[in-house]
Structure formats: structure tokens, C-alpha cells
Image (cartoon, rainbow, N blue to C red; front, side, top):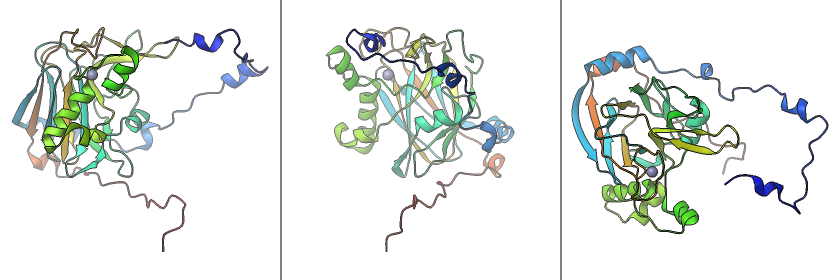
Length: 297
Ligand SMILES: [Zn+2]
């Protein structure tokens, strides 16, 4: 999909104004400078993670998803075990599914890809950290020569609707469907009854970027290898769901059974809680929610 349709014969021409160059020369301003927001106490986080003991683990089979629960103050890891594999993560407040991960604002606050010290933020009107990234064995990757990074908050999740739109086929094991089945099992409901709770993901281990010429979303083979993991501190009580993407390492294709696909492991850890005694646990946003309107009498 390129943009050549904009230049087809018969289309009204788009004429650049005389001062186009000077308009383009305006200097960029970081929308949300990181320094304006208090960051997590990484030293305390490191102290806590050194005391933690694994209490639970589960396996997410290939082309499928599983849910898991993590209490506030526990850590959880997503671990590569059998081979390069991308995971699609959803998070909800365990007591209220209307509070869920807000990929768009997380992107605006931290950038297109997240790493150690970044937070996974919840939607409005809550807008608080749901989890803080405490470790990432792929933290060495940074951004490569294609402009790609790891763990993106720019993709949404592979889904059967887009697949039908573009390929004309029905495929039931996209991450969206996997997450729907897993949450439906968790809530003992039908997938279509809970589908609206499934939301834009954190693309764990996925290597992605935007092409430099057309700024289109691209993926390339994930550098993740067995033993690699990303680790989070749960800032609130969480219900999570993780899908092992049918794209496998997402080097070539998804939304089909064509790619080699591997299981992922989820591990949950309990730290010595005294190491987190001064941690400031987040409350929902204190905004008054009047939005400039009149209060109802
Ligand atoms: Zn997927």
C-alpha cells in the first residue's frame, strides 16, 4: 500500500505554497518531555528484584493465549523458551476490566518502543501506571539501522477483521482471537461477549519500526532467543493475557499457520515486601472530570 493513488491522473493537483520550506523548518518540540514526570525509583526496584522468589509459572502454547493474575507488588516475566517468538500482551485492573492498558498514551509518553523504567499506563479516566518495566534482556538492542526497536506500542495486534479485509480469508488464531478466547475462558463467557475488553497490545519481543520513506509500519525478525525475558513490577492488581503470535518471530508473515511458532512462558515472583515499603503505589488520576461543563444538579 503506497501513496501513489494520491498522484493519479484526474486528481486535483496539490500545490505547495511559496513558503513551504520555511513552514517545514519549524523546530520539533517533544510533546511530553520525560523530565516533567517523576520516574520510578530504579534503585529500589533493583533491590526488590534481587530478593524475589518465583511463586508461579505457566506456558502459553503457540497460536494461543493464556490469562494470568499478578498482585500489586509482585513481579512478572515473559520468557522466550523454545525459539524466537513474539507475544501480544493485554493488561486489565483485576477488579475492574474497564481500566486497561492504554497503548497510545504509553507511546506518547515514552516513545514507540518501551524498555527499563518505562511504565505501561492505563486508559482515561484512570491514567496511572499499571506496570513498570524492571528488566529487559533485550535492552542492548536500542534502535537499529532500519530504525527498528523492540517491544513496540505502535502495532495493534493481528486480528481476523483486518485479515479478512486484506486477504479475504477467515483465520481464527490471530492474537486478537487468541486473547478473546483466553479472556472468555477466564470469565466463563463466550468470546463475542467479552471481545470489547480486548485492546491494543504491548508487542513483546517484536522488532518493528516505520519505513523512512513512506513511514509505513514494518516488522523484521525478532532478535529474541530462548532465555531472554522482559520483566515488570505490577503497580496495581492485574489480570493479564498473553498471546503467542501466529507470526512466530514476525520475520515474514502472520495471520496464518505458515510461520514457525513457539510457546512463551509467564513467571510470577514475590519480592521481600520490605524492599518496597517506600514505593508510591499509583492512584487513579485526580482530575475532577467536569471537563469544563456544568455540574449536574
Ligand atoms: Zn499476532
